[in-house]
Image (cartoon, rainbow, N blue to C red; front, top):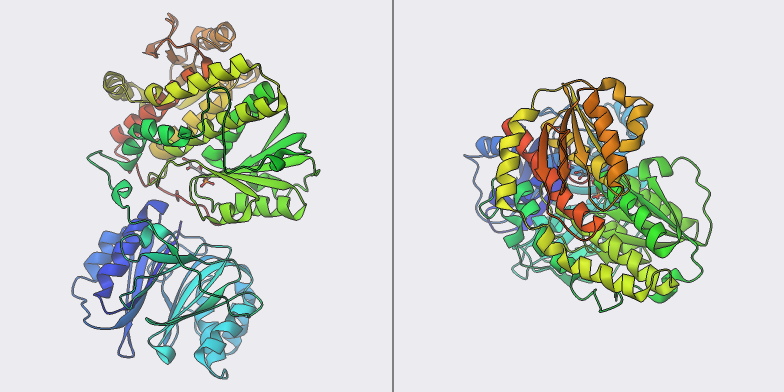
Length: 604
Ligand code: F6R
């Protein structure tokens, strides 16, 4: 989704801003822009499409010496992806970039139009800069004008505003969208909507809290809270490790991230597996006191991980578990009781619907836990407790390694609870811990299998749709397989519980309907097999994924024989990820930045 960068200092600013935006590219965007203020003069550049277009437009623009600048990658919400709608938005003598949504922008816009202000764009953001200039006419200082502006805004925002009326300064504010402020001891101040934009450019940062705002120069930073009290600056060190942000020879970040799953699962398991129990040192045992129910809440791929967990929690820990799609949960007036542990799952920790659901649960007095990949993200800071998934930066928009580590964590959590609640024999917990230890080897990509998927992919380009089917935890895996394929191939795909096909969807069966059947040996094999046979009898094209032979399939992807269905789950997960990717590559699609999608969905 949208990205923000800001810089105050003496270095060549164009490179710093565009480099920062490049680090945020993976979040998805459809236009980009920068504004630089030097010697009371603004230079403004915007381009639709990828950053390369902005680089082309700025190729003759150079600065030397001190300057102030802001940059933005926009993912269209209000108004089409055009140059006029791209950020920064300009007033007479000021520029603004903004992430989030100003909910009362229409009302503010009407008021400003009555005052004679002319609007250039269709965006909600543009009201911010005009409102600021409107207040500037009467305010004692530009910073007063900025604070008066903030008071009028309703909605979520991360804002950077630069004005010729205070030309060595950036005004900033955060409410509901992430914003990070950094400095490096070299007389530079930087801003980013994610720390990815700041790595390598500064060594210490502050993750702003909701309601905080302030004013920065190269040397000074003043920070205030929502009650206008000055806030002490508490910088924390920023990691210097950029390695994980590179493709390392893989064709796409998605491919690299699939291949990385073995290593990141090892990291996720590290220090958490005992001989006969699971350790999550970050969790206080009191978190589970008085808890009789677990409610899991998430979006997209993280929701599929939550669904897998609902099977494992009930099966292993014998605790009532429900799963909620965050965008539904928020508005359905859910009945919440204090004996429920509310667990949100999120790769980014910033997804608007999940974050709001977490806020609702907290407000209702529930204990909360987040399973998240990004430390210091909004959800991690808000929840009572957090478990980090340790997948490293995930750049491919289609989530892969984040899902793998989420399911690993949730499986471990189910065993930890089983131990605490004495719902599994110690021998069974030990057996499953042994299985967990085999996961890094299980998900290691077998080159021969990858080659088979590459060859097979050419036969799956022209049908009228895909059904991914499975039972038990293989049903959410089927949903996830279908989501992966949809996201990057733009082909129509659905995930279904195999037993449901005969209740309607089987009407679609014909040779142009591709069925991807998950047939694990150790979970309901015979039941699933009959469901696939029903589809085969109706001439659907079947691609089965199983360690056992299946003679009713048109294509068969053989997985390894293993001891347990959860091991089969992880192996099939890799197959589905690579299969989708190879189909999408053949279709010539942008694998890492599929159309219409954003990595971090910070609007509802
Ligand atoms: C799919 C995908 C999305 C995210 C969803 C939630 O590949 O990446 O469906 O899973 O937008 O995002 P997080 O996990 O960051 O809350």
